[in-house]
Image 1 (tube, rainbow, N blue to C red):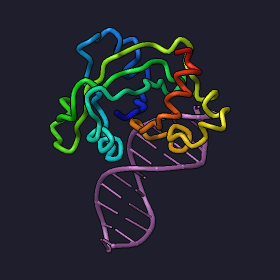
Image 2 (cartoon, rainbow, N blue to C red; image 1 turned 180 degrees about the horizontal axis):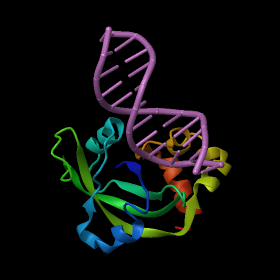
Image 3 (cartoon, rainbow, N blue to C red; image 1 turned 90 degrees about the horizontal axis):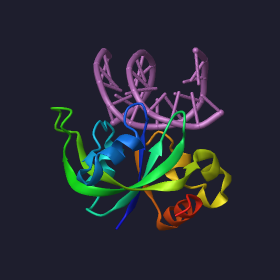
Image 4 (tube, rainbow, N blue to C red; image 1 turned 180 degrees about the vertical axis):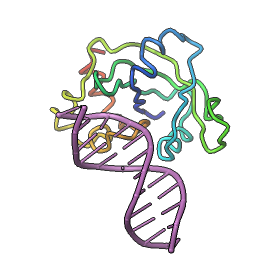
Length: 137
DNA sequence: GCCAACGTTGGC
DNA sequence: GCCAACGTTGGC
């Protein structure tokens, strides 16, 4: 069981849209980055991740679960690009902002801080527990 | 809206 | 195989 962070610009795909998909979940499509794709290849059913809103909001807003293994990205014919499906599990009671993450020395090594451009990234169990706590879960 | 950081592309 | 040019992302 691994933990992840999925980043999305709310204008393109928001937490509310993800929640609206319910149990069926939705493809995490549109990833055009090898590093991000390679992480998705290692994901397993039941892995959990934070749903992060980039740009204006810059905060983790909810928790998702991987509900389909890596498969071709239906939004392109290019066989290089694949994706998993994720479904919303629960919102964070309090969104955990990038500011809060940066303010906590224990989270200074998060990929979110070190490589802000990576749209799918791993989260350590310690980071996971801390952010859940900060988020009121 | 700007710009730094990063990844990808393509010419050599 | 290197590296310059370019495009994109995302924080500020």
